[in-house]
Length: 117
Image 1 (cartoon, rainbow, N blue to C red):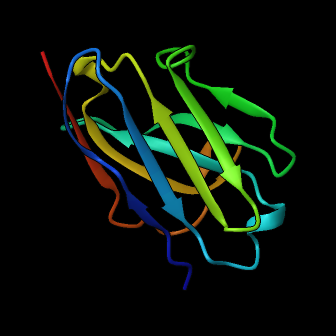
Image 2 (image 1 turned 180 degrees about the vertical axis):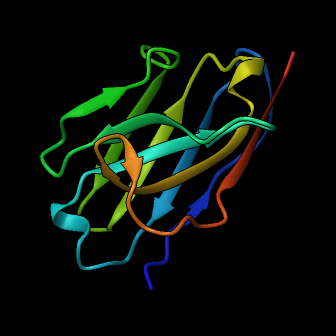
């Protein structure tokens, strides 16, 4: 069973920053696209950002220019730097292997991000 462990969430004021991290100590990591996803209360989980094994990135329009996804293949982790946070960024954030904008494996616990206005 694949274990994905997210960390770094918290409570922050609007305009602030947080850095999320995901540890994925799996053999697939070096060749897999990885992604971050967000689920707000009463909403479906949505795609936020992805990064290929080679470092190419994609972002949802809602976070483009504010969030940056990065990865360290040697450490098998993927980070999400979130700047200029808005209340609408509030939600639980998850990482996963990304396939066409969707998570491939079972979801982990995620990490909660709450942005106050």
